[in-house]
Amino acid sequence: QVQLVESGGRLVQAGGSLRLSCAASGRSIRSYGMGWFRKAPGKEREFVAATSWTGGSVYYAYYADSVKGRFTISRDDAKNTVYLQMSSLKPEDTAVYYCAASPGGSYSAPLSYDYWGQGTQVTVSS
Image 1: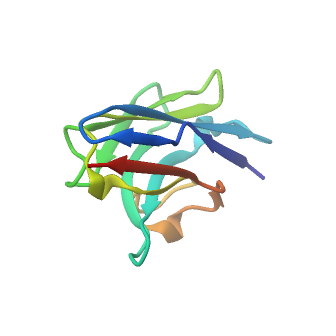
Image 2 (image 1 turned 90 degrees about the vertical axis):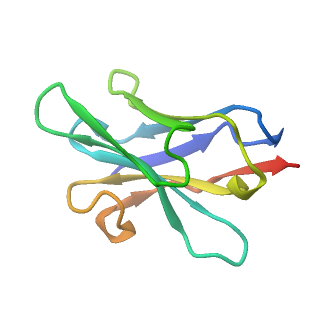
């Protein structure tokens, strides 16, 4: 079992920056792909970013087109934590952001992820 707790969400003005954190416990995330998803009111949950583990020391990062160039995902396996650095925020980035852990499969598919956090609210004002 992996427990995930997100933090860092808050109200921010458009154009601002924010860093979300996802602290894991119960098991090391070293062998998990880690992802961020978001859900806005009235919309489906959507993929935001993911970082996969290749079995060595190399991690790959993947991003949704809507956040590419603005968001950066990173992980610190020693701290068992994943981060999402968000910049140039837009009102359409407003959503609850969820962290998730995946043992494998498609990085953008929610069904690939076995463990989910409770989410943290990000609100971007115009």
